[in-house]
Length: 299
Ligand code: HMG
Ligand code: MG
Image 1 (cartoon, rainbow, N blue to C red):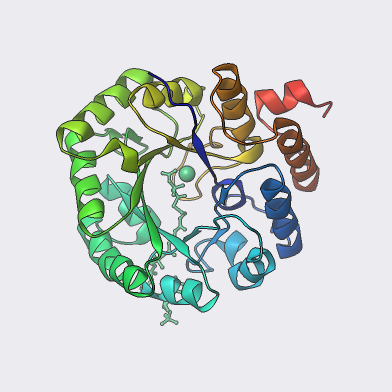
Image 2 (cartoon, protein in one colour):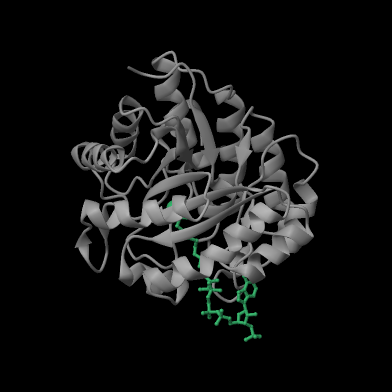
């Protein structure tokens, strides 16, 4: 059956903006996050403490994070290594996320490491995050379905890295369809395999990009398998600078529209969310790709 409530993990300020060529001023990002918090979203990924040369758009993390830290919402941040964790801890972050890859090609492109070298890089990060007062740690796993260089990704390869992330102490996993090629049958097969491998579905989230327009169907499939955490990006912003052919994430508005129709509570005010995405679209200088934003606004 379907859940009564779904937790939306908003990634617009991080995944949504990281691919924007023109640097968005930190004050605009902070205002975006404030407006998102005003819609009832409770988990808003704020930024990444990565190498500034790798993701120039998020090089202002030290300025941005303190500007939103007072908000009464969870503000997870990405940390690839111990240097990133130190930067996040220095600003009082309470939730961090490491980000692994199910494929060697993307591990190389995104982290300059093999899959196993990147897992070895995350191990002390997760351990220290736990020691430093029990931070909540999310483990992202990219390329869970298809990879631009390797094609279809075998389910067993995904299960192996999921197990490794859980074994090192991640509290939750987010299954990423980085380039948006997944379809519902594949989602079903992966979730069935993870269940068979003893991965508790309560610890899984799904992270779909909408390249082929399958993100909502994939989400509904995941909900039917018991998943209760769904990543989405306000207005459908997004893409990944290290994965050619990645487009925006599932739009939060499209997700909320579907969930509302199903009678599933998210606590999110859709009107305010649409207004926030229209406001952000004006800053970025192009309309939101979200169908729901377009339908409910006059942009
Ligand atoms: P590297 O070049 O191998 O780094 O990059 P290194 O460990 O060799 O260090 C080189 C230099 O970088 C050193 O400085 C470090 O101090 C510095 P030097 O001694 O030469 O002066 N450095 C740092 N500086 C600031 N903050 C740091 C940091 N780390 C090292 N954290 C590294 C390795 C992991 C750092 C690099 O590859 C990187 O930053 N990658 C980030 C890529 C990224 O952010 N990708 C997007 C997020 S993932 C995603 O979008 C997918 C997701 O949405 C899910 C999905 O859709 O699938 C999550
Ligand atoms: Mg992503």
